[in-house]
Length: 387
Image (tube, rainbow, N blue to C red; front, top):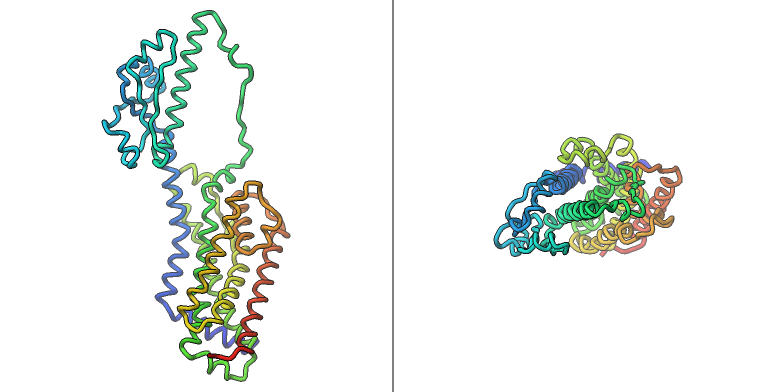
């Protein structure tokens, strides 16, 4: 262990000496939390602003004074739409749906007919598409009011048209609803940890082989296991440092939220940060071992970078299982590294309880993966000839 400690200190100093790369990794890991949350808050604030907008853009509203009167009684302002609104909607230059009223609206309404009004939008235009529901609900309210007036004029109670009263109840916790918006936050933290350990893992294996400094190191009378433990420990420490900074960055990032709704629902305190760290630290150790196992067979740093893309691809694709799986969480999810961390970090954001076994299973899987990878690297250094 004393030899492993010497190698550990040497590799850690080498990793910290590359200040430019280290600063880029640290800054990106610290900035990932605030940037993601600010981007989400801007998105949510924009959606809320459009949902609460009291403006309706229309064409031909002069033919429907009854409809205009209803909109104004609902505190909505009717504005004229651009002349080429269809082109602007398709090109995303205009961000509101457009209501088109026919010229014979009042005549058909007085005759008891149902005039056809059109709501123009473009599904690729997310801003305009977000306001369609508001305009449609206004029109449904107008329909209900007109139907009620017609029934009352004929002495018929409007309640006869409502056989049942429907009330919607959302059983989701407010934090669970917020987690639907912040579901990408654990993914960015996970990738920050991966990229944080990537450069150190490649440099301490394929980088030393390319520079020719690995052969003199192996000529020392030291056990290969001690050398590997020291190298792996240094790489794991760098990954764990990135995990620590990424988790702590969410604490001040909440001050930057522009959406009051998201700020009220997204609660990330010291408890959540501690749970994130309990999940990410073993994963950082396991990813360090995996990256070293991939790079140890490579002859150059560039070749190791190319081979490590497979690890990056696997880690980035595993969390997508939660997106495509609509049947809820499965027990085997906790046995796959990366997927287990994404699953449990999602529980933390939802405010759900996490049991001891929920933490021990990913910890055991990460420890097993780390042991296998470290043993493989030691075996490669012990048996394979350096070329």
